[in-house]
Amino acid sequence: MPPSRRAVDGYLRAPFPWYGLDEAFTGPRWLMQVGTAADGSVQHGSTGHGEEPSIRPEVAGQDRGAFAVVVTVAAHPMRGSGDGTGVLDATGVSSAAWLAGSGLLAYTWPAQLDHALRGEWLDQQTETAFELADDLEGPAWTTLSLPVDGVPRPFHYRESEFGWVLAGTTGGVHLGAYGRGMSAYGLGFAVVPDIESYA
Image (cartoon, rainbow, N blue to C red; front, side):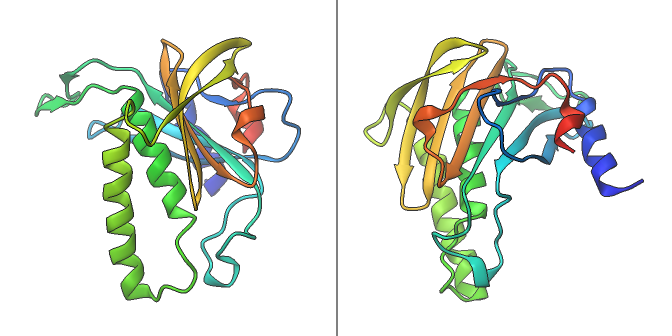
């Protein structure tokens, strides 16, 4: 089975709808990966738009292309794990903010860092992203209204030297997004009618 087919199959197993940029975006679309729980159930995943970001050192920096990634997170209250071995934390807008913040970091590490320092930098920045996601009412965030399926919804939004991150909810799922080189202010989100069109 080719990798692209395996990637699509993961998305098709999700019991919730996937979101991407709405039809106003006419550029390339591509699949990233899904996240699963211990029992194999799909919990979240991401769809990419624009130029696929690279982490190769020779293209690291601010000139690595414009992209926006939309993260869809299943909305769950605190619940027992599917295999009966424990309890899974509830998901919320903070979950989407954390996944978006850490996703952005994966593609924006400074090119001048050597391999050893990169791990230390990533640990520090990831911890910061977690703390920021846990404080969505804090001063690091502003509020931005963007359309979701044509209806304006409030999002928490922040910018950094690496790009931007936002997070909100549709009621059915939580949405996060991150990007660089594309303004978040002009984006709109919509249910993906056919996830295989991203493959």
